[in-house]
Structure formats: structure tokens, C-alpha cells
Image 1 (tube, rainbow, N blue to C red):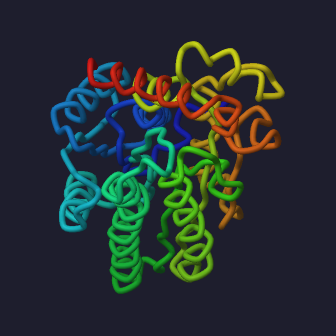
Image 2 (image 1 turned 30 degrees about the horizontal axis):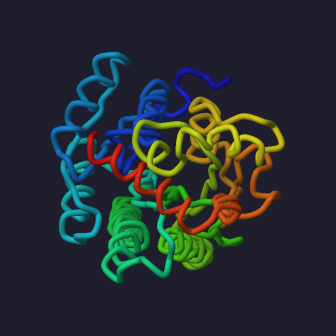
Length: 295
């Protein structure tokens, strides 16, 4: 679908790049010539993923530990990538946290944890990246390079960022904030050549988030909500991310692209749980928590 060297001049940062969809996007970016820096709260996971993808693709991937809730740590991550590769040109806000809960039983700390990772974390990464790109542009202009350099920020949101969804109130609130940030900065930072867009994925099976959000006995029911009758393939999301990070999408700014087989047209992603009694919901969510603890 794409030329092998499509991203050869790009240096892309991926938060939460050690696992799941972040890992998949990192691999695809590297295959197409980008140099990539990934970060995650578990440094050993990020480092292992970086080594594996580098060995498999022959590309350059830097893996570092970083908690996106800590701005200083995020800024150090961006600086380390710029020092290693000479510049940064792209950022994927992928790090996230989510869990299912009946809201009346949700603790304030549970709400805060998700919002801190998703909304504050995305802002921290975007701010640190944006400041670095603006400096690069100013330095380039001072050196008679024309000051044409810019950057691209791509945030992974959700379809319920604008529709809402039952049982994921912290995530819905945080992702709505990320979407508002995306559209706000798409206007404010356009003068610096920085584009901001978002992808709103539907269900894409992963070993992490996906397994915590859909009980095995309800997988069939979840598919029934999707007009195309199936979950997404990682390759499909990877290719969309590549396009939005590439120069070929240079006139797309402030947009959110849905990739969910039409699911969002059927209502909030987790609203089907309302068909169950509170007791049944409790049992289903507890089973998911048990499986998560075992992992």
C-alpha cells in the first residue's frame, strides 16, 4: 500500500509504544523508514520492544521508561529522542488507561487515575513535543534553513469521546478533553507548521486493554453492534496512522478519523451492558478484574 521509504525522514515518538496498538504502529512506522522512540511506564517492556523491532526491521527504535503523568519525565523523553536522532517530527499520543465500572461505585481516585494518564498525559506529551518542534523551527530559520520544519501530533481517542458511553465515564471525559485539545491546537499551532489530528478506533483485539474491556462471553454480542460484523485488524489501524503521520496528509488538520466498522453509529461502545442487571454487571466486571490480576 505504501512505498518502503515513505517515512524515511520522520522521527516519531509513540507513548505507550511497548505493547498493544502502540507496538503495532511502531513496527509499521519503522518498516517504512521512520526512526522511532517509544516510552512506557515499564522501562523493561519498552526496551525489549525497541530491541525486537530494531532487529526485525533493521530500523532504529529507542525504548525508554516514562510515566506520561510526570511532565519532567516526558520532557526528558522528548529531549532524549531529539538528541539521539537529531530532531523530532511526529508524536502519537497512545498511552492510556481504562476499566469498566458502574459509576456509582467508582472511587474519585479511580476517576483521577484514568484522567491523569489519558488527558494530562496527552497534554504533557503534546506540550513537550510542541515546544521542541517550535525551537527546531526557530533554530532552522536562524540558520537560514527557511524555518519550514514542523511536526505532526496524532492522538488515539475513542468514538465515545463525543457520544459518551456507559461504564467508562473517566475514559469518556478524558478522551473528550484530548479531542478538544486536538482541535484547539490545530488552529493555534498551525502557524508553526504543526498539525494535530486524531484516530477514534473501535474494538481492536490486544492482550492488554481489549481483554480488560470485553468479557469473553460477550464477544459475540459486541460484534453484533458492529455493522461489518467483526473487530478491527491491527494492520488497518497501522495504515491509517501511517497516512496521517505522512506528508501526504499535509492538508488534514484538526480532524478525527473513525475506524470502527460503523460501530459508533449504533450508540455508545459499552452501552449494551445496560441490558444486564446491576448484579450481572458486577459479576462480569469482577471476572475481568480477576483475569487482569492474574496477568
